[in-house]
Length: 276
Ligand code: ADP
Image (cartoon, rainbow, N blue to C red):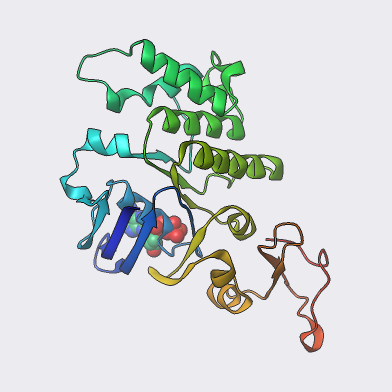
């Protein structure tokens, strides 16, 4: 079942088009990765999916309805966002931030009830942050804060969760933990996930399909095996790479070649050059 449709979308902040001819469908329960070089339009695309921006051309539809016709509060029950930067200036406590996720479900001047608290607690349990529910968010590490925002997004009980380059500041254990968490939420709740990431290897491991953007257009879209090829990645990122199969998952694996091009086309042994 299709949950999200992006139809011939074009968007510009000023004279120049930042996104053009963007069309794709997302099925309910899919995990979609969006990759592409800096400035290729990933964050802008995510903002169009959340109704923060509206396209000048084409349309975005959620469950068949144009996003223009969905009220903000209703949209917040359908789509939740985990932003790139999760730092908060105001010293809210973790539990308060998670509970904020319930606001799209509350009427005006209606306070949270027992059920809302229970949903917030469940979200904190799933994301393993219950042990620091009383701590102030601005005292947490980047990885902990990110889990708070994921819990807040879950408390929103959305159909679709959008994540923007959220592994950017995390160490490798937390990067893997992030994708493991997303995958388990996706499996348990049937939640549709769209994640912008720079980590091509992690995307290849965890997502069902990848959108590769280049200069505001979809260069390739499909399963990781179709999108993450040597020619696509080398061409789009203008960097020499070697793509082989991850021996554990069988998914594509990208190795940066740097100043070590394979001699006579011969392949480097794994581990000979830094991984992306
Ligand atoms: P990415 O997330 O792939 O790095 P962005 O969507 O952030 O790409 O940016 C795409 C293009 O839009 C870039 O050329 C960027 O400079 C431009 N851009 C992004 N945000 C704004 C804005 N608020 N006003 C004007 N131009 C913007």
